[in-house]
Length: 243
Image (tube, rainbow, N blue to C red; front, side):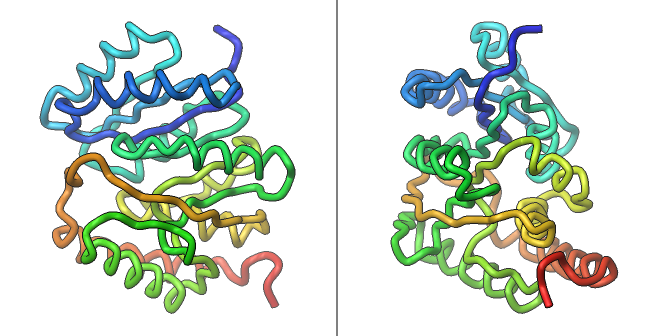
């Protein structure tokens, strides 16, 4: 086995056949500017187009790229399996239509300086620029408000870009029980409850193409999962470091 890279970039992908090749080429052209050895882990999940085959072909062409697949369209499971498959000391969770190297640099600086154990790129901080359609920004505000109300979340955002030291957060990933859309929220909440230093940093969010999954169709399942997460965390008891 080749030597482990310093950085693993984990990206869930679903039905990205038309977009994947160009996005990977752009990312591979830009990642060397980080000045660290890296790998890209594409975590395909239940695509109905040629995404899985394209991801495997790209992995054969590019030594720094690895591809895995999980059955069914399940973003959370894909993200979880991608993180667990990562070999780098630092794990950066990105989206195929974002590829935010500015966030990568700032997050790595915070982690390497010991200023954070877990960095969240929040699109809802005052200094952030969320260039998505207004209704999607509003949905993010409502969702984060729900997490604060129902689960005692202390930040502003749980979805999107993340970075952490793999050894510190690996046990938290394994403790997560949910998948799909709410896995990302459970991961951040459990990191808080484990006493890790979760730090938010502003980001500019500019998606390069429309999302592949319709927002409104996800709402009922998300609400059910948030309710389930609230029950699970309540049964587990008081989080570490809180009165």
